Length: 66
Image 1 (cartoon, helix red, strand yellow):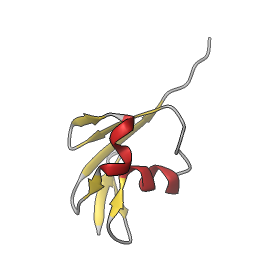
Image 2 (cartoon, rainbow, N blue to C red):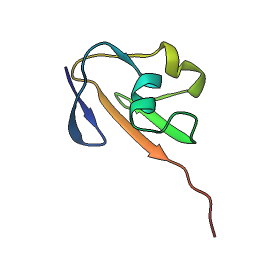
Image 3 (tube, rainbow, N blue to C red):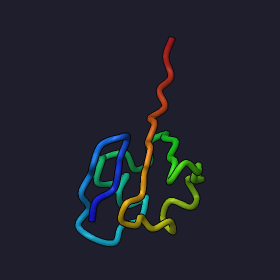
């Protein structure tokens, strides 16, 4: 299936959760903000939120610095 990830087409092998997607992108456990179809998803819901074909996902990584 295909989704849109940060504005780009991104193929997925099959049913996936947000947590699994973050793990595949090496972002699991890192400070990120995730929007699924323009709705912010809380980190506690990543493991239970399934991704469907055609979904639009935006992932923003947070970084501290000065």
